[in-house]
Image 1: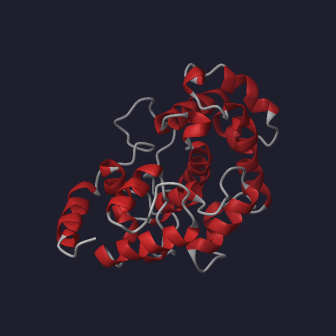
Image 2: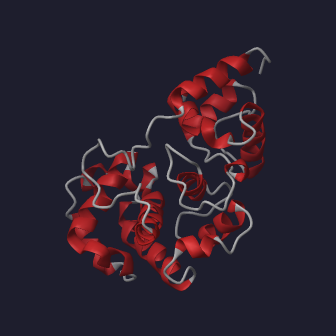
Length: 244
């Protein structure tokens, strides 16, 4: 990349980085049944769990468009209430998932949705003892918690752990994100490398091609982002997604 692109990129990111994330934007439909901005500790615990469920589904091959993850989770929450967070048997999710009005829009891996959701709840109950906030405080760095999430939750692992880093972005960054895991520093986050962001990094000459993306690519792109915003490199995430 040419050095003269840096000021332009920095300005673009500043202009577009305060847009609300669609998964918890209160203006969007369907309306969430939780308040992700609540300051109440129990509400924060529930939000951390709820958005881990959302992040686990946020994959084109699973639910298609990202907004379908929000739609399905709201429907499941309407059905089960807070019992949603205790279901560890995939079979209990199957019927409700298949009856979702957007089921035909989901990805080719939609049959995995019940197993994915059940694995999240099992992780929270068994590994986090029901409290993801307290669990997060047992780690010094976000990457340590990401490793654990990737190991135990279905389809949140792999070489770049994209969905786990997306979740960590929501939980660690300040507004417009949620800053639930407040002891972690945003400066220690890594870019959740989607295809859209990969396209931008190819244009910048940071990565040679869009696929495959490996961890060393994520490190290189995050290092570049730290050049723009040392204290908050993942600030570039959504603006780069828009360009991509």
